Length: 562
Image 1 (cartoon, one colour):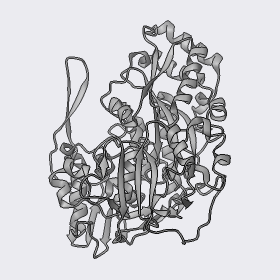
Image 2 (cartoon, rainbow, N blue to C red; image 1 turned 90 degrees about the horizontal axis):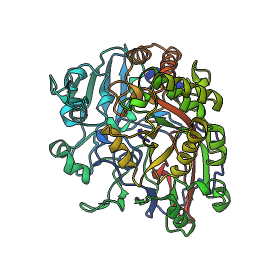
Image 3 (cartoon, rainbow, N blue to C red; image 1 turned 60 degrees about the horizontal axis):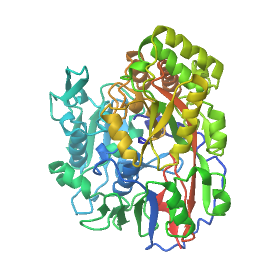
């Protein structure tokens, strides 16, 4: 997901093997107790920021909108705190050949408006999400289903400014491989066998939608009706833009994420400093975003009220392919120079106080299949001498346009300014170029700039796992037609290796292909891996205990209030 969010994974018979290899590890104070004596009616207040888009599951692929969508909706599957898939609305998910899948939907499931959830509900929702004219950010997640290419077809044209644009031009309105056999049975035929396919079904793109959402998606997204652990607090006015979103417990939800509190109010902050102060005063109950200056003190500031563990989330510095300074052979050398110029170890220690670990690849270590030995990843080492030499080589080929400072677009609410400033100083000191932050108060503003391909320089980016797989950190981010590939990186060799990995018969074979795909990324460097994340969180005296799941998202439904 989406630190951009919120993909594929390796599931079915391999689901257990695909569960995170180290997610439950990690230090920190556990805090409180796991007793169930908390107040089940108390509403929890939590740190957040304004979502980028209306709250439609298939159109939400950033972290702040995603945390709300995940509480409002439930899908065929969910993921337990360690990343293991468990059935939610699915009675069963079966296949004999990994290409044709039969899904039984539990009977008696309903949205909070009383509308029944049937096999047809899922078929209609997925077709809506995949159809290119509906412009859903997560349409890419349905690419494996037979007929997806017909509903997602586009035409490309080049304007007078030289920019290429894509216009939806679907050849069909529904995917041929998706049918409702009866009220409770979904049949899915994939374009090729993929043993991993069922693991994806817990991701938000696959959530069901009530019929009114398909009639007026924009209106629905402002006040969504779901079927998850929570529902909007009011029929109107639950989302006060730039202020908060209020949810209350959905008493009718009986799935694996049943709420242990009375609701969640997400309060929007543009700076983590005031949020931290509010927590210290018990005016906010939980946060997963800490100001940089609190990373050294949070364990003492919130004794027995903090947690910190490695999670499936990483950070990158993305380089738009449309920036002429980084195109061609000179551009390739400059990308390498930028990477060698970043002192990841020092920034991880000084700015993040050890809550980040220098990256070794394009996926974090807690994901099954991770290896620190990807050929080409030596470019992640700090070597200012080599950085200067590579930059000088690039200058001989094509001079760098230094008329303006190199800007790094970033939201400032997540404690990002400090590390971006540190990276900018690395560039100044080691490459002799001017660099600075391009600050934004809202993460959504950065995403919108990236989506419109109007970045003047680089951009901070990151990925929080949608489901526990190596592919999830590659396909949705760097695949040619991927939903979160905002900078439009494209390499046929990379796409081919991903496809071969998805078709592999074992998780080991799949991960070998995915790691080969990372070799391509290290040659091209469309983005620079920076660090993998621990997720420190703190909570107020009003909370017994809080915890994060496998991907770093707070398990809001599990928070017990005093």
